[in-house]
Amino acid sequence: MNPTIFPFIEQQKWTEIKIGEKNPADPQESWVSDYTYGGYLEDRTRVLGQFDPEMSKMLHLGVDYNLPAGTVVTVAHYMRVAHTLADDTKINGWGGRVIFEIGGCPQTLLMYGHLCPKLLPKVGAHFAPGDIVGVLAPMSENGGWFTHLHVQAIPRDYYEQFDNVNDLDGYVEDCENTMSVDPTMFITS
Figure 1 (tube, rainbow, N blue to C red):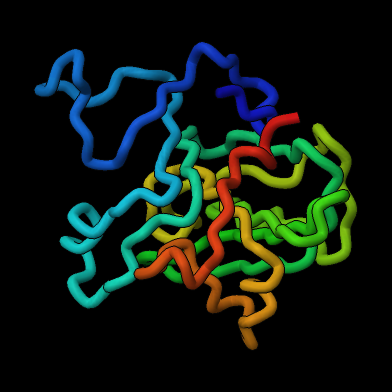
Figure 2: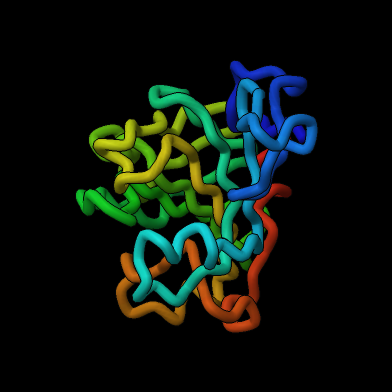
């Protein structure tokens, strides 16, 4: 796996993990890796339920790329900004979020979440592969999460069901209702 949206990170430095999973090489130790990713359609009920018992949507619709704050993020394909959100929620928020229309793929949109809210591109902006579109925000600006980029592919039919796009979430109870799409195909060139 080599996401081209992080141009300054080498492929061999990535390790795929599941949230809450122990390192099989040493179950007493946490993962030892420069960068980790994972989470598409992962059931996070056990992990996230402890923080918000009222939260019932625990199936993760994106892939999380765990990197340091300040990491530059680019796009792998031609994109147009369809929507942005600067969410100042301090717990379970988004921070900066951008939803892109993907050139050549009108039936799917791509969302990047937990970016620096002050550095969001403008709606309507166009980007080519390799163009910088944002920077990962620190926990104090990204909705209170560990520092990571949430990448989620959204079927246009599902996206258009929302009267308020700000209500679009990264978790659902039932994946069939979202017509979920694996986002990894949209972050490599």
